[in-house]
Length: 172
Length: 81
Image (cartoon, rainbow over all chains, first blue to last red; front, side, top):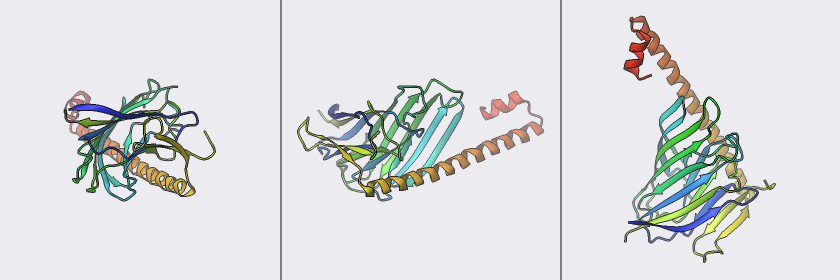
């Protein structure tokens, strides 16, 4: 197995409300998105939506740590996207960006798609919220192959220099 | 930030260098965005309530253990706190 870069996008000046990869090639096994990001507001939740599907076809469980003193475990939520905690907040230390990795397994198949996200952000300031660590397990419950991925915040914009790279995992 | 939010769309069916489009959100998309904000805020209320309830239960459990005669160190040893 090897990982091939499909495309890298960096948000320009003025920011962007979402980043969407469309017409994803169907010749890979799994997809990975490496996402460095920061919001222009104090929010930290990022939504992942597949195939522009706004139906209630997503479920997730998450373990979130807001360091050093707060752990939020085992949320089980169904919804119209998979939301995870892991965006860089505007009120965090200047120029601090979050680092997220999203994996979608068997994305071109007709089975439901499992999705995992690990996300961290280092604030290095404040008594609470010095950092986030989150692990999210998700499921996209349709039989449709994944042809597009949209990343967005709830009413917030990704700031300039936020970067998303899409990879496909292929068999050698 | 611009007056109207924009989205970045990357059409991978196009050749490299021609894939990226920066598009202003439509009124419909802005309305959808506001719905998502409301959903997220509602979920945050639920999450905060769950965290508060758990903290209250933990404090109550620790009080009961202390009433049984356990020291703070013994309570910490069995609860991992």
